[in-house]
Image (cartoon, rainbow, N blue to C red; front, side):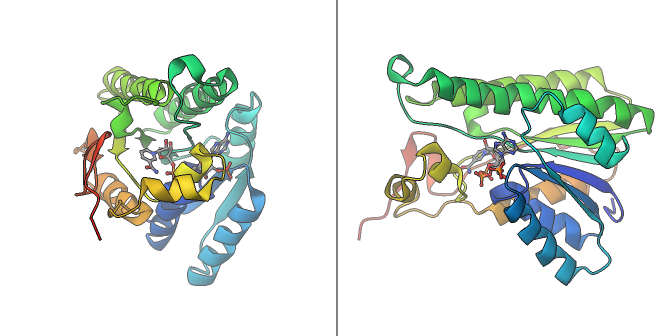
Length: 255
Ligand SMILES: NC(=O)c1ccc[n+]([C@@H]2O[C@H](COP(=O)([O-])OP(=O)(O)OC[C@H]3O[C@@H](n4cnc5c(N)ncnc54)[C@H](OP(=O)(O)O)[C@@H]3O)[C@@H](O)[C@H]2O)c1
């Protein structure tokens, strides 16, 4: 299916996977609605895309995805007309065990990864149904299927995303809405820097002596899902680097 002129909202477009898929969707002629909190990162991406694709239409939505006013802002910016939602904004905070973890971190993960993700879908799904269809691609994780010590809250949030995706897919079956998710293992983005609050040494250690996936790898798979003919739904892609066997099994080379 051609993605040319499709109107796509990407949450969490300022870095990482969201940024990579914005670049690939721009190359296919999509009109982009790019949402994140950091305006300067969005501006930088927008200039880069306009340089390589002078005809492209881009609207920046500088917002916190957890804001209660988001539905109103999304309506203003998109006029309630979207073909594709990449529901991607999310984060992990800390690697502490439940008993020592910080409750504010729990709130931020739950509010962003679960509540905001579901609320964006709640806003967009009625528009898509009214307009005759659309595609929703949720960023889940292998943590939406498996668990690991020190990841209880993050894993719980991604299990919730997975359940939501599957229920929504069933609810909207037959309505030309493709509800899909992608569940990556280790991808080298700012994810670990955010998790360890800017501690570069801790973040770099996550990917040391192994080859992680890149945001471009994930974007390539997302584009593959979106470009399928409309009668084809790839419910989910679960993907890990060759060096990762599970959240707790990582092959690190000895030097
Ligand atoms: N990297 C991995 O290993 C991995 C694996 C599996 C799944 N994932 C999932 O992939 C998604 C993208 O992560 P990433 O790896 O690309 O990490 P990243 O580079 O840190 O990107 C996260 C994006 O989410 C945005 N974001 C976070 N909180 C937000 C908020 N409250 N409001 C608006 N935007 C917000 C960030 O933008 P601003 O900070 O500018 O707002 C940023 O654009 C997440 O859902 C993550 O859970 C990542």
